[in-house]
Length: 281
Image (cartoon, rainbow, N blue to C red):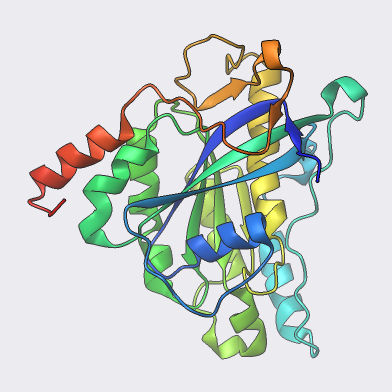
């Protein structure tokens, strides 16, 4: 089987409370499967996926305002077949020229959500180009804690303008039983607007709904920053933003291997934090 080629590789981190479905979202994207068994993530696990990028949608298709979100919420409640009404339109590429059609390998760092791992997982936030901030639409506490996670990622990230997508997961449960929903689409959209989060989408790792869309939005927004010279991804450049271009001497990269060479020793950082917390090796 031929290997997928990529032009850029970018570090993406998954953050949010435990059991929100961060690992399930990653596995759905990378392996296109779902497991009902919840395995606790220890510190962090890494997955990867090559996705096409050609820029973000036009500004008019951005995060919906509160009134739009409320209308969508009402439509969802009236849907007798429990079919999800997609709250955001798909990304509309700003250009379709061959020059803009590139592939980006997402190096996805799936971090632990438990509080006692927090000091360790913060180490992985550094040099991230993008982030999926995940909460569970059926558990209000996970949404309440989103502000804490947002403060963490922004304080630890090298790039103050890190691309963030707010993700409300487990819509399949809310669709099956609307009484289970504890976070409305309207209030989540309002939270995103209030805190400067440009991307917001609801997903289901179980059905796969909007999963590729969530990662795609982050990837395309990162690609826009490369095209606008806000990120220097050229070969040989320092990588403070968690993005680099494929090695020109070897052609475009391949889908296997190729972990992003970060400017910190993540393992050493984790060991230091673990010792500081009195954790076992």
